[in-house]
Length: 306
Image 1 (cartoon, rainbow, N blue to C red):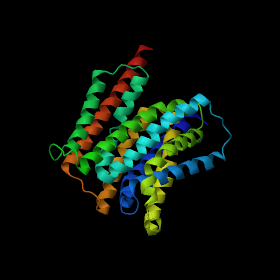
Image 2: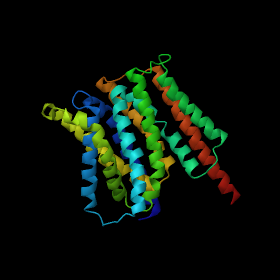
Image 3: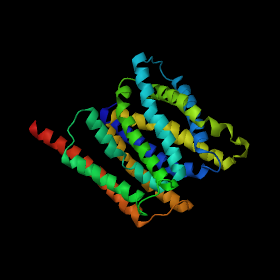
Image 4: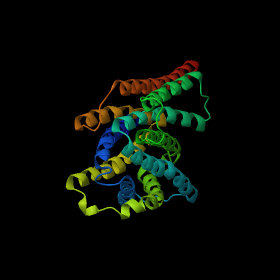
């Protein structure tokens, strides 16, 4: 397939993944904690994710993975599945879909910084300014009601969402090495298997105390979206795009998530959009834009030297 066509499909896969993730903020919030507890959903998501990726691998050409790479994938699973999913679900359970999605919008900044550090690129003043602007947006969101009570659910939820964001950004950078070596399905089946081994013990208590028969049909459909949509399809689309594009480009698509989450959350009455949220989002987007602008400037300079 022609390279430009492959890149087009990569961009479309990222668009689709981030639309799914934007919807997931609201849908996951709908089922937690009334229909299902966060850690019980975490366990269910891990089990089903492993099953879906391993079943898919049965229809793919067999691909063996080097033992050293399996150890590397185990480390990747800690950031991409364990920390990412745990802090996402627990954070979302404590805060609002809009807050969580806006904080997630800092992902491109962290992804670019991790990529720069791992690739040993210099972090310029402009990159630092972009980071500062983006973090200012996050701090404005967290500090909107003054100095927060560190014990409050909203503050903890926002903090957990930020940890999730940083962890996911790191994952997108370190997993690219494996995606260049193995098929995305092969990578994901091992990442989810290792992640499940950690997530299951963490979610055992809530899983064992759940009254599964009390979950309504509507709630099961919403849980199904979280599992099939946000877990299986979302991860698969992201890693397909990441295989062809840089982590920075992949992360920039997170712009889409807060817009979808805010719109749907407002319609369903889960949240409301206020001036602080708008300004916070603008600051975060501005920070990401500055970081992206820096990357384009480097490319232009390198092209002029040729």
